[in-house]
Image (cartoon, rainbow, N blue to C red; front, side, top):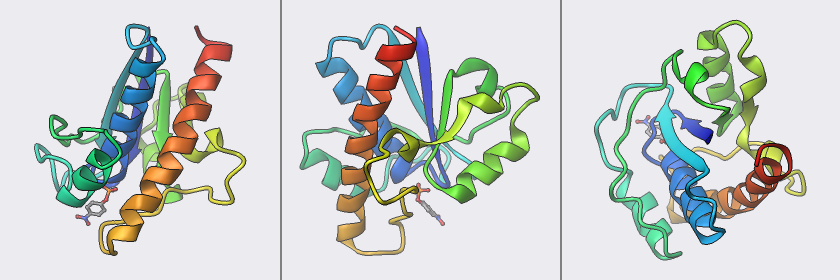
Length: 157
Ligand code: 4NP
């Protein structure tokens, strides 16, 4: 079993979007039993909450249902549990580095490393912006999800 954890700040916008989109891709590709997915936030502001209504609406319009997800905070033990710990932006990456146990840093990467064709290196925080930010998050997440699955297929399955 390969385990993937997506991490953003609040675990209500970007990382649940990545969780849902990647889950859908993995299921469509018939590898759902071999890949386990979760998401978490570096901060505890929204622990226990459903994904932001704007994220849910934008994802659902692309056929991805995020409604069952609930926010949780990332913890050092996640690095023992997961094979990939994927940060949405540099700030998340920095916060994750601070709690990453010795010897586990190779698991930690920016998610968009898996979409090298994109000009962006970070998935920008859409929380305080308008609706287009949520569409942009989905575009970036869809591209990186394909690259991530390719990486897992080539290196792990
Ligand atoms: P996320 O977005 O990190 O993509 O879940 C945010 C959600 C909440 C806040 C900031 C970003 N907040 O400040 O409450």
